[in-house]
Amino acid sequence: MRYLSAFLLVIQVMSFVACSSQHSRKTAPSVINGMLDLKNWNFETDGPVKLNGGWEFFWKKLLIHGFSDDKKIEKRSFIINVPGRWNRLNINGEKTGPYGYATYHLRILLKDKDILLGIKFPNIGTAYSVYINGKKITSVGIAGETKETSAPKIFPHIVSFIADKNQLDIDIHVSNFHYYEGGFWS
Image 1: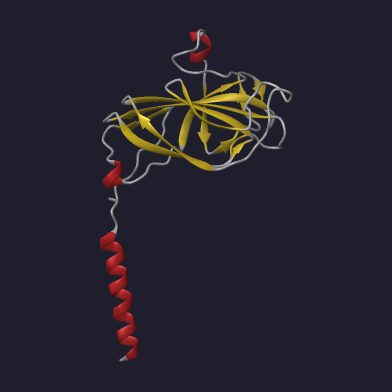
Image 2: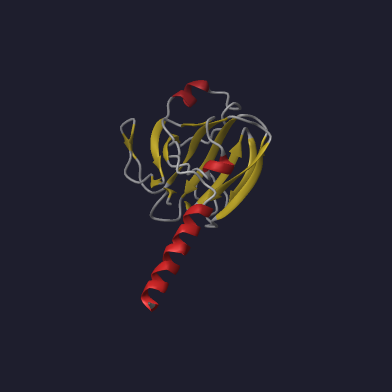
């Protein structure tokens, strides 16, 4: 009888947990070729979305989309998987190592604007600045083009912001001149 009671208690707890989940089992879209379409996503019922997938990657360029003068450079991107390291890539015949700098770019399409969103920034190696629609929302360390103009720092954190448009251009300037791996680590 004691085992039956324990079994029923486990079933009740599992049922409660399954029924109390606020998020649907809808599969979240992935980032493809630097684009994430969330027009059919409801954050309240569908839950958070990971920004994993193929981001646009501009090696040895620090760009802010919509504000850069050289459109030819912007069109010459490479797709890189996030999370992932930029070590040992082959970009236009040039092999990358751990040291360097780049812009990661992602365009997100939303159904609504003027909504509160948040982004969790994990370990990015080893300094970065984040711009959304041209406005800097956070930076960790100093992302620079040389070892002398950059300063490393690792600080995972979450940043909240108001999405004032239904199209978000996220540019992340990342530099690494101090560690044996560069890029989005996790």
